[in-house]
Image 1 (tube, one colour):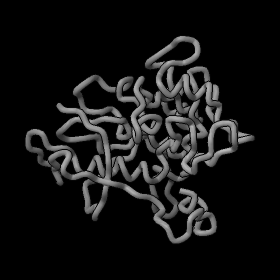
Image 2 (image 1 turned 135 degrees about the vertical axis):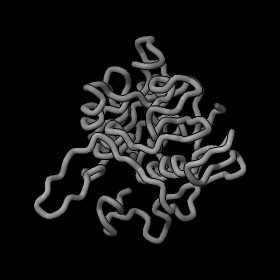
Image 3 (image 1 turned 180 degrees about the vertical axis):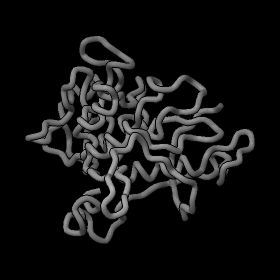
Image 4 (image 1 turned 120 degrees about the vertical axis):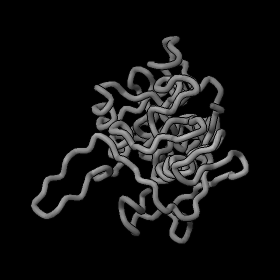
Length: 240
């Protein structure tokens, strides 16, 4: 992500992959187009979901509070822009923006949907407090997936489907933790556009216009099915 936003000079690991996406094709049956057989999952929706993760829609905080480089709570860490917007229910950041030290007490309370005031579930747990996301969400910080049992790769790095989508129904947002079989979400909503802008992609969702035209602020990004090439991914799924 640093390389994307800052050019080659910002690449923290020259010569290594800038992002990886893994895909276990044996886990589910996949529909590659717009026609679905019973039990098939949407290849296109899942692929885009994982690519958005690779662009930086992920916390990168381990269950024990370490960063991705093994720096432990109480010491300055190296955090993704996404993680620096994560807060508890009352807006207390997990990470101090001056020292880059993670507050382990606040983090442990919020990462499992059980904040210090006894709240749990929607309205408590982990929130994303970026200004663009809050504005797109009606002035309320969006809820981040923080189940009471930690889930590697899912906790802290998705919108909370438990708060936004009824069980066994099509997801409201592309970046929720779960999906069901059949046609998936193929629109990146204004909320998700706001979150991507908060983490640094200031032009995310801006439509290119002819010379002399205007550049509207989009409410969402509609994705069209096209050639995705060879991808890999891992996404939690639930049966329809």
